[in-house]
Length: 201
Image: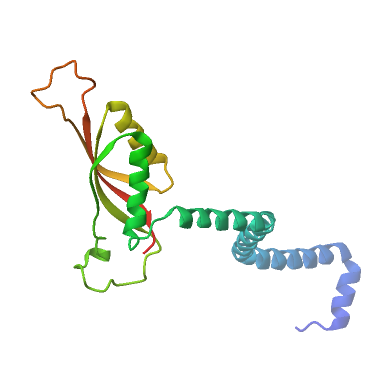
């Protein structure tokens, strides 16, 4: 037995509330099923959009300081360039230590600028692999002699001087001649250092 449109209309007129409720339940059921299937996808999309929004918000927040930060970085880079040594300018580099000798009163016993180590562990004389480094450690062997305050002053000036310095090795010994008497003044101290000054190749 087939139902026509007139039969459905008549049935709806007899029981409008029941049929309306059944139809609404079907519509709500279909909508709920559709929405529940789309929830994981929507949550993933929401998380993605939230992350993107946070990134854009931080970009806007920090971009206000970009000019100041760029100026600070450029000033710091200029300062590092000015404070770095050039390995080829040996005489100028030695003057740095000679001035420190005169200022502190120590006596320079040894001062040698050593050869730069080969990049990447390669043998000296072979071209380095990869990009040219921006900065290198220029090695020095230095030995000074003086009283304890003089030697300490020399060491402090090295650490806080014009050029960036990294001490690699240090040894201290007394230099008093065994034949001298103990009342001949402060015992001279010899300080031997291996150090690096920051340099530009």
